[in-house]
Image (cartoon, rainbow, N blue to C red):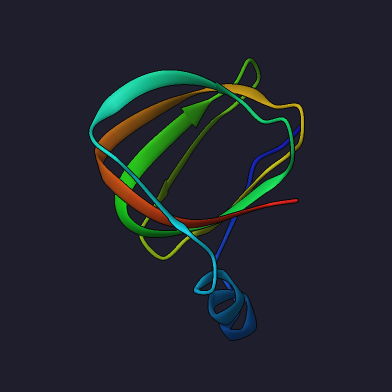
Length: 86
């Protein structure tokens, strides 16, 4: 299970701007994805660690987390993101 981080295309940005926003302060916490999640990072810097990889992303990135992923979020600066499950 790989986490995908990419520069979003204009259409992807427009679609993600229609989605809800999630915010979180600097923190470290475990997380499990019951469904695939796509998110557009608006602010912040995060490193997500799994058993096999460590992935960092920041404002402007589009990140896709696969269904079934277990990971630990390490929020290095407060994060705001649009998110969409499914």
